[in-house]
Image (tube, rainbow, N blue to C red; front, side):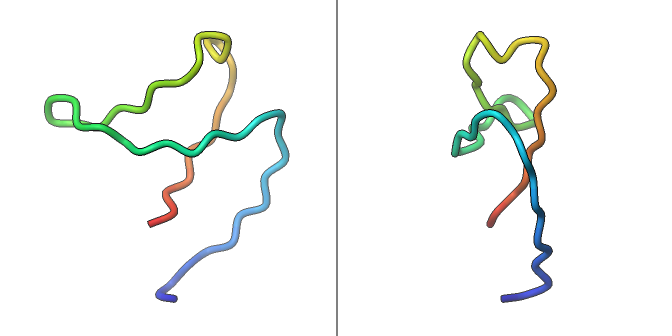
Length: 45
């Protein structure tokens, strides 16, 4: 384990996704009912 940080997050729902390439950036598709909701993204690898 190299320089990992522990995060403790409370929320309503969790998804695990793979970031897909989109031009010069990355993209994650989320459910439409998450529109206008606050989310937190944590890179795990």
